[in-house]
Length: 244
Length: 268
Image (tube, rainbow over the protein chains, first blue to last red):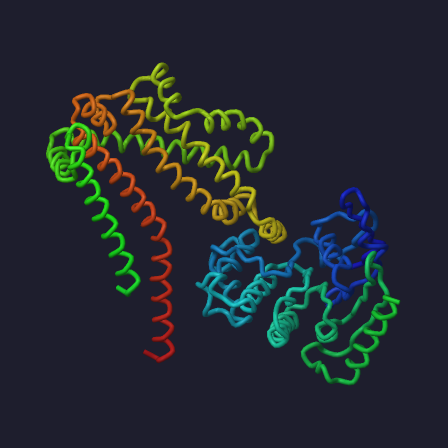
């Protein structure tokens, strides 16, 4: 995917607020690209434009042939239908894709099994913890047969250990089904653990300040790895520079 | 039954006894059966009414009118409420009707309806005009409170319009429809009986009240009032029980699932 010269301005009380300023970068197919930047810098707007929920003022998204079509979106909140069971929340997004109930059942249950929630299939979201609900959202995102997956700070409301657990669940699923992932976060640890490529964005109006690549398989990475520590230090330096 | 439930029931019983005692004392002081018969006399009148031959017919006529009005309000209020919730133009178009319905005194509606319609149709028409705004406003608010985040999610995941209606719109509206239905139902009872009192159709609780009043049978007026209260309370209880049913079924299925899982876990 190529993001070419993307710009977007919002208007509040007649005053223009430029959010994105000429964002340009390349996202290799089947990789995880992390967009990092300060809170409120327009990362979510970028994802919403890619998902066609917003339109850009200028610029374009050029998709690889394999990425065209459906998009999976992991939002900041799980966005589960509260009156549906865990199973139905996953199965519902397959109705337009799979005609037979048996197929949908197998896929939904398989995904729930992968995130460790198959025994909670008949529970409703309000009977689950926040982390479990987000795991259901992950199962739903992977169950949906989209080659492009957008993640908008999906673990932000959780404590560190739960965030790590969910990130590992996500990465395990991704390893077995490598889709193009655009992952927005402001956590450097999440970025270095998940990314093949990190795109650093400045404060408003957001523009690309650095593009860093991360080597090695995601699930084998350790946070105390000297290379990752060096990478994090370099990210902090770039972020600091963009503020001064 | 726990302590707090016992206390609540005891307080309720004491309140009823105090009310009956107060009624009895005031009736003794007034000492005129035409103005205020005591509770014993009223209960005797109630007993007589229950044993009289057209009793079921009177109840049935009122229940049928209330039920018909309620169904009409439920269907039109929901459909027009959905349309107005999604379209500002529809909402603007219906605003004058709503303003008139809300501001017109119920007695004026009944009197006008009696000029235009037969005595059996008046309760239906009047109940509709009084109950419709309640249902309509609830549904409009319901449509406006549908989560935009969930709507966005269903669009991203490519749900069809039919699936969005079935799995997002209707469940989101359900609490509002229930609240609207409950409020309009109690309104329907009051208006239907009031309309029967004024128009005196052949059968109906309101007609019997009116005839008893004309004959200065105050004990029977009070007895029919008790019957009207009972009808309202009974439908309210039935309504609540109907609402609890899905939750109870779910709880039972959860218990069954949990016991199956325990049996599977212990290898039984």
